[in-house]
Length: 234
Image (cartoon, rainbow, N blue to C red):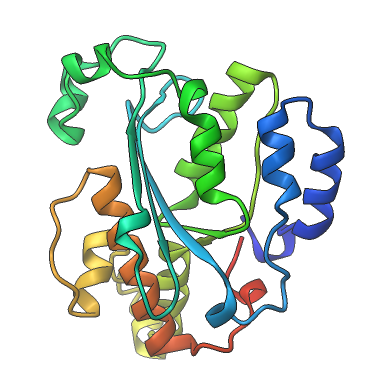
């Protein structure tokens, strides 16, 4: 989302709290969100990652969700959560190779609607951190629209967006003149730049942890603890 298109999230939460019909959504919005002038060091954060059946939220679905609370100085692994949820569509055998979630796991998994209250409680009052926000933002909004007739939106800090900004700022005039390709910004590539350990990708909880660590490194090296969240979120 372009910076100019970022909504006034405090006003949006107020509006949604009054407008939502689903009690779980009302409770989520009632917890409010972080004020835009809040320094990132004072902001309660939670990293989130989804594994999905594909990349199109209009036809693909969420398979698993990982959330990991954090601050700039700590990651609260004991408070982390992981859910496997049952999609409405049949599981594609080819996608199993990527995310490793099997037919038997799906068969015994709950629908997203069953764990929604837990998920929203884990996110409430916290600023969500993701890597490539269109996945988490659009998949969750579409999933709730299909189940509840209502969407959900909230601010996110996208570590991919931040890393692209960082790398673009480091490009020289010669790089631009020669049209040299920009450095890759996939999660693993970003982590390598900060000498963070390699984790096996495509597990929602592990990727949420990897995203949390990446944000801590980005803030430490390029932004500083006093940067307001409005300079980071989308």
